[in-house]
Length: 535
Image 1: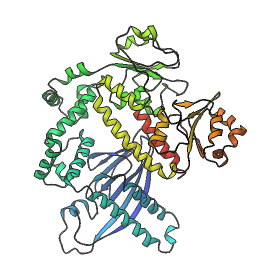
Image 2: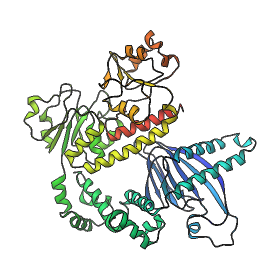
Image 3: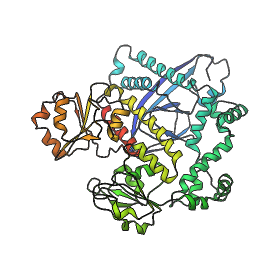
Image 4: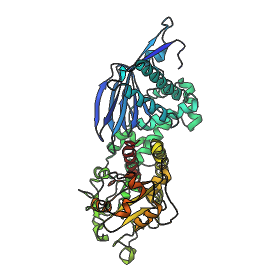
């Protein structure tokens, strides 16, 4: 809603809060109107009794006396800027419109929305400048208060412009579809949806059916049943647990609704579609399965690399009931028979080749010759009957990659890169073809490769090739600290342009694993976090 009377906005305070991974801020009640802008990371917010998924560019409009709860995801920290402001109506002769009565004087009426990628960089830059204006001594500079006010009103203008871009009916429907996707597990009145769209109930229902082909109630039921089908494939979930996780408090009513939709009871669906899957591979295909909503009964582990169960930390909690198979040795079929797997996903690696030992087992599916993370995801999804879910994961990852690319743009565009791994007996040079890491860095995040002419995933004995290339920047990943220390004394290494110019970057990349959706997203988050300190 555009106000037809003059309003002046004043910035009261702006603070940046960083929640460590998994940390929660318990519910509190806002005393003043506020805006929350997510700068980095992912998490969730409970605002006024409704749940929202947070990602960079998410905006929360917090009305006075509204309860708010924040939690960072288990995969990384969440950075959010919290802005208190005051809106003053200069001409109060006219009665305040409904938006003012509900939200207070604000240029945005939505409780939650996501900024588009076009506006986000500019808005982030304004926020950074406003944060700098709060630093000690900044207010003493000439014109500081005026500059601060101008920055704040420019920020509000951009937020309002983004909000107004949602004004078309189809965009309003799309916004409520996203909201339903985030809140389907909660009980809420359907009249909430027209309110979120800013439409009358009759206009909303007509527009909703035109866009989706369904009524809002039917769409919500279909959404909940689709989510329930994913959960029913997890053998450790009870029927009551599944019902509650998709918004049904009455288990019997859930069963009747499910049967009406699918033509069979949830119990029968589980019997027909639930699969016990074991993995024998050198890649964490557990990652792909978990992203698709299925937990394997057994999967590979690497105890000499990762402490505990032999998984990276972002998988450990999710796989606590999964049998860890030591992939650093030979895994025999007989180890899996007590688990009664319906399917074994098998890859050839090291001393775990296929051969006669695995040839006679009909429940074994062999995956070899795949060169991309999407190829593995599609193959696993085909085995599990989760092709639709895989398509959604690929779409979502495209957005995550683009967001990461935008965040790194000012850094990756300066100079050409070589990516290496330093080991005790070798230096591997990743050339940009047929490897998930170089595909991610060069193909998706915008790092400029020095050379991408080779077909193999990486080149061995890479120091001599590095000397020929003499790259401007070097990224060192997955490397042995002792071998890296030894390399630092090598005269060939020390004469490289990147080394001489101090352009060698060595992040803590132990858990970077771009082969699966979960690991790929973590790798992107860690790249943005690490390189952000140099921008």
